[in-house]
Image (spheres, rainbow, N blue to C red):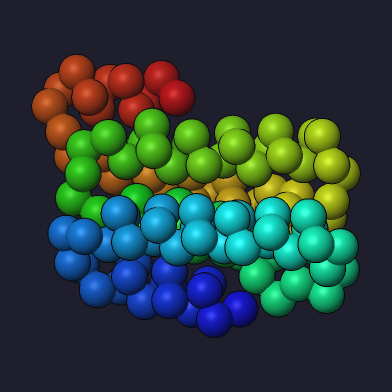
Length: 122
């Protein structure tokens, strides 16, 4: 939960490093959870990323000024969708809100005409 709050804070900060920081936090969580899982503590782990965490990371991309935000947000969505298909873990099942955030990333692309057209195709 604390990691998700931190990611949401980065989203609101408008700091140019926010996307990098959010992805670093996700990676850190995934590594820590994997370590817990290897040690047999997966059910007790407090660092397991949830769909809220991944959706928050997508939200960081939406609010960024990066012109590749549609692709980056969709990469996270695809990753989570693939993880859910394999694990059937309800904690990472994409929600309507998750898909809306992905659509927002595409809609808010401010790049060149070519980048905007690519975002619309998505």
